[in-house]
Length: 149
Image (cartoon, rainbow, N blue to C red; front, side, top):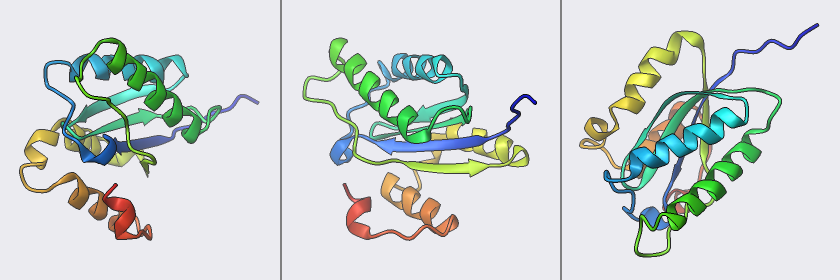
């Protein structure tokens, strides 16, 4: 029998120390680059967007890979991409860790809208506040000191 799956996940991670380093002048090049990584690993990019200090993306996940391997590859390769293109004058680095949240088919439209409207959404709440809301919504225990870094 073939393997069939329908797994949708949103991955969220930030710039190290929550530095506001991602500029509108190059973030879409970064999104295209990350989309290429996701697709080359056999996943489907559904939505990607972010702010100057963090990124969100929703993918159709291929279960032949592990989430941690995918995120590690995205962070490493995109770090190199940012450095090679000299997008940032200082040292750029992603934070350690990430958030990953799963969704059903019926939730995709609202998640896509949420990701696409990051600029509007973040006029109301910070990345830290947003992350805490995600963790509470999904009933994930956390310590405040791990949210700040």
